[in-house]
Image 1: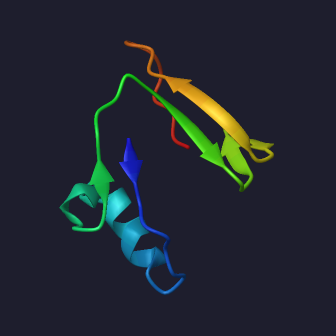
Image 2: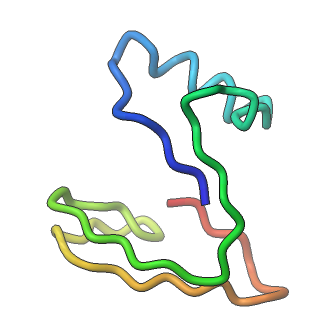
Length: 71
């Protein structure tokens, strides 16, 4: 799980560059944790697998040997 700080639009290209270079963990304000499952509660809408979901509580579970999912 990767947790980014609230990103200002001016810094968005920097984080996108770091993501594409697979170097995001080198940023000091980014938190990286390995988890098997997590619960996310958000007041904002999310994009899950190409579908817009309204604000809610999500329980995410890692399925070993499955496809990669980018949220």
